[in-house]
Length: 112
Length: 112
Image (cartoon, rainbow over all chains, first blue to last red; front, top):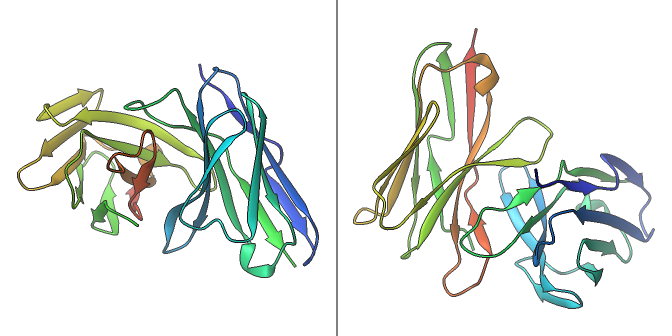
């Protein structure tokens, strides 16, 4: 079974802190994604990576950056956390189209 | 840029009844996918239907696709309390490798 893991289920940070969210998949998938999910807004794509060191902005990249140094790991970085980044963050991976995406359990981030 | 829209937004049924959820989309697609999300968790892929398929079954799930109407439906038969979750349809972005766009989801409550 494909497994996508995220470093934390719950995280509380202060405004201005640098935050790292880690995602690891164990199925050698080329493509990895970071989404945020907010009530009434559904899932919105933050960043997408289609290969090591390759990344592409999604719909809402402002305030975020990403890193993919190894195929299995995709990190989301909040350079200076703000309260409007309080959200559920979901990581996903896929071997490529037209396959399904496999999601991690999510990280609920609260920025105080 | 959301393409899929689910209907209704919320559905409450009695255990044992069937649940029907609908999804409409705007542009041509080569496949459509349905996902489930239990409260506070990541999404789980349920079923993928390709554009040349009209109907697909998986256990108690039945998905139909009508490309002329740009719509899909997900039927859960003989519902159980454990089916209580949010359900999302997702479609690939045109010409955009493995990126998907998700609807805002349907909240299904199955009363014991």
